[in-house]
Every structure is written in structure tokens, then in C-alpha cells.
Image 1: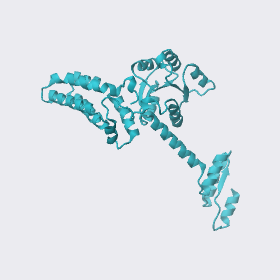
Image 2: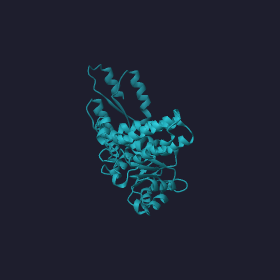
Image 3: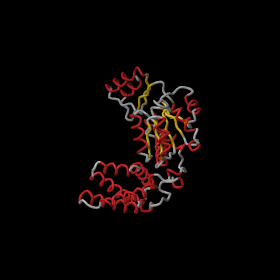
Image 4: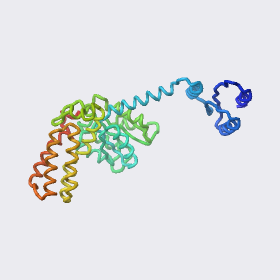
Length: 336
């Protein structure tokens, strides 16, 4: 510190860049004295100094490219690749904490992942009976049925023996990983969740070759992939994400429309059909688009003009029949 002040008194035309190493207790005092002398240090490091932080500080002071930026860039690129590879994957989140649910929903939803949420292990088993999933994110400590018991139960079923189950636990004690593996889980993510760890782990267990996250490359009845890709200017990753969101939103289309009809809410019923018509046209589902348009017209006639009520039920059945393979593809077409 005193050497740096002495250099400042020498009025050097080109003073060398300086990295100042300090103990934690002298940082504020050093900053005050530098400010009084109107001296700018290129960096201030607190001891103990690691080799990597010292190297980065020196390279920064000399305005030379360092490894830190490249490492950061590589991490960002890897995260982007992992997120893109997971678009369209079907994941079941088993978590009872609403804040953790919201956080996971935001992180995974923005990656185009189709997410279902169960409050406990028993609900998770019920979801697995209803829908296929590529992976389960399983909290370990939950009421009703915890993650260990739920995993042991699902492993007893032949159809779920190979389903990846990733434990999520706030515990970080020695032996936790062995405990989750012994319960039949495949891997472990610590809470609070680290975003890089989350996506790298998911990508490891839901690789790009998994059928359900190759949404833009497979054919389904009623799906014109070329037309759908054209509407998003050939952006396949975006198309996958939109298909995933379509599945999540429209899986309960019939229930929502029938509920609106039961409440005699004509506006809500018409909006259901109208929204489906619009999205089906965007995603390359021409037959569904035409059927939804016919249903919308019948609903408008019934609620706004007082006619056409008899046509609604067969039109709704037709829409539901065409929608079914698109939101819950049969086993031979689970890759959309």
C-alpha cells in the first residue's frame, strides 16, 4: 500500500497497473486512502488469494483476455444446448412447497418442458397412471407419501422400472446420495437448486434421442410439420416449445368447454373454440383448425342467435377425437 502511494508521488507519465492484495480487515482502510490520494487500483483482492482469482485480476489489469470469460461463455453455451435438447420433454415434478413449485415451473417452462406437478408421492403415482413421462423430479421430504416410498412403489411396476427419477433434497450430508440411490432413484440434485446443475442433470437422463423431445421431427395424424415450421420461420426449437405448451393447455379442452356450457357461459365456450382454432392454424393442424372453426360457429349460433344447439355435441366429439392424438400421443407416436 505504501509503495503504491510512493509511486503516485513520483508523477510517472505511465504508472504501471496495480493489483492490490489485502487482508479482509484492511480493505475499507485501503479504499479510503486510495480515494484520498486519487489513485485507482486495477483490482483489489482479499487474502487468501487463489491462483485463478489472482490470474484473472492480473489479466484484467493488463487488459488481456483471460480464461474466466471463456469459461463463462462455455458454461452459457452448454446451458443453452441442454435447454434446447429438453424442449418438449414431459417431466413430473413432485414437490409440496409452492415456492419451489413456482421456481421449477418458471425454469422448466421457459425451456419448453411440459411439466405436471404433484403435491406428494401418492399424487405422483396417480399422475403416472394417467400420462407418460420422460422423467420424475422427486422431492424427498413430503407429507402423505415421501419421495423414497414413492420411488420404491413405482419401481415395483414393470412399466416404470426404467423411468429416470431424480431426487431433490435440501440435505447435503454425507450418505444422502447413497440413500436416494438405494431407494431406486437415478441421481440427486441439491436444494436450493443450481440452474446449471439442474439442466445438466436433466439432459443427462433425458438425452436428445429420447422420442418425446423430438417434437418437430415426427409425424402425427393431423399434424402438418412443414406448415407449422413455416409459421415460425423454420425455428425448430421454438416449434417444439409451442407444441409442448399446446399439449399442456389443450389437454383439458373438452372439460373446459363442457364446464362453460354447464355454467351457461356462452362467451367462455366460444372463446375456448376460437382459441383452439387459432392455435391449431398456427401449429400446422389444418383438420383440427376446420373442426374447431365449425364448433365455434355452432356455439355462436346457439348463444348469440338462438339456434344450432343440436349441432354442438357431434362437433365437440369430432374436435375431441382429432385433438386426442395431438395432446396425448399413442405409444408409437410419443415423439411429438
